[in-house]
Structure formats: structure tokens, C-alpha cells
Amino acid sequence: MTTREQSLRVAVRELCAEWDYEPRCDAWGGSADPEFSRELGRRGLLALTWPKDLGGAAESNLSRLAVTEELLRAGAPVSYHWAGERQIGPTLIRHGNRELQDEFCSRLARAEISFALGMSEPDAGSDLASVRTTATRTDEGWVIHGRKVWTSGAHFADYLYVLARTSKGEDRHAGLSEFVVDTAAPGVHVQPIIGMDGGHHFNEVVFDEVRVPDRWLIGTEGHGWQQVISQLAFERGGPERFLSMYPLLGAVLDADVLDDTDRAALRVLTAQLTVLRSLSRDIATALDAGHSPVTQAATSKYLGNRLELAMLDFVRPLLSRCDGRVRALFDAAVIASPKSGLRGGAAPVMLSIVTKEMQ
Image 1: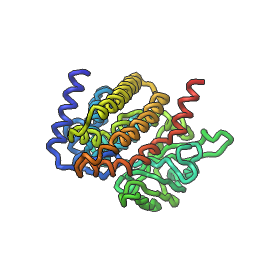
Image 2 (image 1 turned 180 degrees about the vertical axis):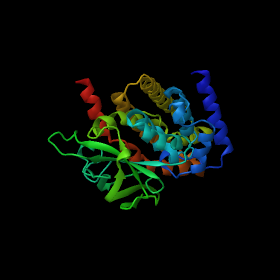
Image 3 (image 1 turned 30 degrees about the vertical axis):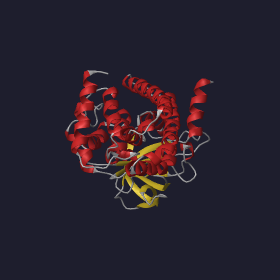
Image 4 (image 1 turned 90 degrees about the vertical axis):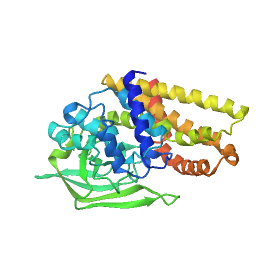
């Protein structure tokens, strides 16, 4: 670990110690705290990898990894900026034109605006090639019509990233394009999907003849599939795939309730976590080199979810020895575990990606 990575970790720990919040599992999918995100931006802890003229610090993905690991470990309220800082900004920098970058990147780096991801549809969950939402070119720009589901954070997001079909052909991977859509635009309807715990995280978003300016087309028309595949490396390869339940594990360790048998089981989990952290560093290094480590990211997501489920199995028999805080974290983690496995692609999709690479 470099000196810079260590200093970034200290900076995040200082902010989390100062901030009034309740640590939670699955913090990046939880309630939004715009002021916390903006304070991260003011302290130079967002958009670390972006160019300086777009609001970033021109640092490495390893620096960003140090920040995100600490935020997740602390269960900090990060959902307001998460999608925008993790993948929308990098996507605009990689594929967007300069006008699009200037319009959004600096505001994202300061967490002045928030994005949600409009990918999954009723008949196209993890299979993005089955997307049916359409975008039709007009003299003034584009008109989008369709429906997205399981759209995290759409109820507080200012903008949506939308994957839509702009032409049809035999190759279902062709003819897809990416757009920015204003959630306040006429024809955008956001309906809540309430979870079993009564929480509001997911949404259904309906696009009823929504008009989008031509400048909000991301990259090249019809190249959405190629662009979104590279984008998914950002979404699937980060430490949120194996650290979302860490606040629960940390609380159990703080409770000091482990016996020798428990410590032996903990060593197995720690070994698995160490491997995933190493893989995450490899992914960050590959991103710094300009690659799109799609297979490694799919591997991280698949194994990360298995580790998180194993953490729940580890904690469950310890609950009778723990206090109410641990039990509350455990209950929240159990409820979050199904969506943790689905977001960014279900396990069969991840295994398919890995298998194709091995053939």
C-alpha cells in the first residue's frame, strides 16, 4: 500500500468519525445523504481518477479503491453519489463527447447531482441484449419510450442513465445506444418498489414519449452494447461486491463473543476476503492500464456475493451472544442479501461470462 493510499484511508476515517450517521450494511444501496457525499467532494475524496479539468484529481484506481474500501467498511451513507461517481462519470469520460463531459462531470465530482442506472427491464433483467425500451431519432433529438425496473435510487436521482434500442436487426447485441435522461422531464414516471422490510430502494421507471436532446446521446449510436460491457467492469469489479456486509462482521468482532471454533471459521472468511481484495486491486490496476477487465469483474461479483452469504451463515449462530445492534445489522443484511446478488447481474450471468473466457 502506498503512502497516498494510507493518507486517503485516514481522511475517510476522519470524516466518518466526525459525521452523525448509523453504520449500515449495503450502504451504497441505502438512504441518500447528499451532504455527506458533498463533503467527500469538498475534501477531494470523489472522482479521484478523473482528469483535473473535469473535476477530478488524475489519480489511480488504486487510490479510489482505498477510499471506497474505507467507506464500505464504515457503512457510510454513500448512495447519493455512488452510481454517478463509480460508473457514469467514467463512462462519459471514456465514451462521451466534450460537451457532455463538461455538462455533467464536474457537478458529479462535487456530488451536486445524482444519477440512477436504467438498465434492467421486466423481460430483460440481467440479459441486457433483450432491452425493449426504444429511442427514436427526431429533428430535435430523440424520443424514448419504454419501461425499466429495479432502478436503484431513481426516486432521488436528478438524471438517469438509460440503455435503449435505436435500431432492430438479427444481431440483438447491435442497435443499442446509451442516453442521459432528466428525471424531471415530461413523460418520466417513477413508481416505488417497496421491499419486504418496508424500505424504498428500487423503482419502476416508465418513459412515455420522453424527449432527449441529441447532445445527451453517450458515445456512438448503435454501439451501446460495446460501451455498456466496458462500463460493467466498473460496476461489478469494485469492493462493494464483497464489503457490503462488513459492518456486520465488524460489529461481531467488537462484541468479542467468539470462541476457538468461531475463530477457526473466521480465519476461513478472512482468507477469502484477502483473495477478493487482491483481485480488486488487480482490477483497479487493469483499469489504470486502460483495459476493461470484464471477466475478472464478473469473478469478483460472483465470489463476493458467496462470501457475503457465508458471512451471514457465520454470524447467525452467534446472535444469541450479541446485543441488539448486531441483531439489527444482521436483520438488515439478510434482507439486503437477495438484491446484493442481483444488482449488476445474477450469478448465472457471471458464470456464463467466466466460462466463455475459459473456452
